[in-house]
Image (cartoon, rainbow, N blue to C red; front, side, top):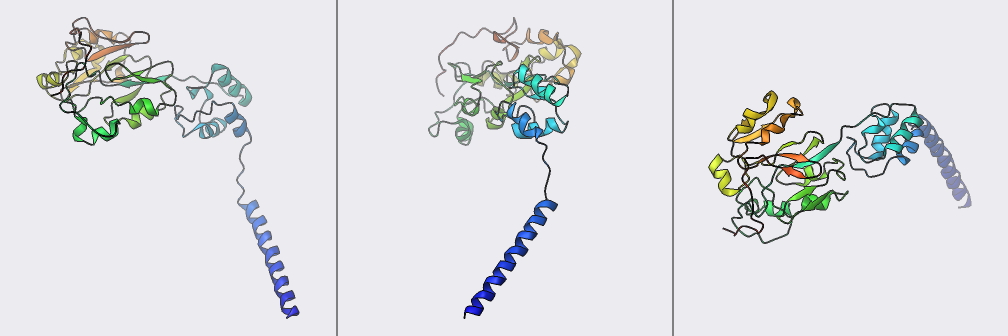
Length: 289
């Protein structure tokens, strides 16, 4: 009996030695070196994990910087001082980032857009969109429940008195959370200096579109005629801007828009309409039906 226990103990001890040796060998053969500078660079990043740099998070961005696949200046959240500190630490160029900002392709607040029915249910755009599109006459338009505001980690979006999201350029990091969250796909990320925007996605024909929303694009084509470099075209009754043909003098494209659907996004004043756009005076919501 005692001999059996001794033998069993010796076998277990032997197995332990063998297995620990195998683990030690495996840990050495499978070891992946990680550059210690990655931890240091990550500590110099803001930790927002917003994705505005194009990476999955700050850790992934730190790895890309250390590997020479990205420049520190691509972080839209970090301070200029910290960007320069990272660049000095690694001995690389800081680089520059053309800031991007979220833009909303809708101006149809409840004071100008018709509501066909009252929606009852969870007060989110995603839930409302599942029920006959949310009850709005313009099936392309913003539903106004603020899902985009709720997912913005930087408090860059607020809802105005007419139920439309307003983006604060200074706070927006172009993380893309609002783009992913909007069930109507109304948000896009644009370079902040590209200020011409078609604030509409309605593809109904002119009169039909305007019947549902007073500021809808009617596809009249005046902006396309006035825009330089053929940067605007009319596709499916809607004006489309080709930002690859961007020119700074393209503000002329807004002036003859009859509904004000195409706007100039001024940094301080917000959306500016052209001189021929109808003047909207109504402040209260339109009646339902």
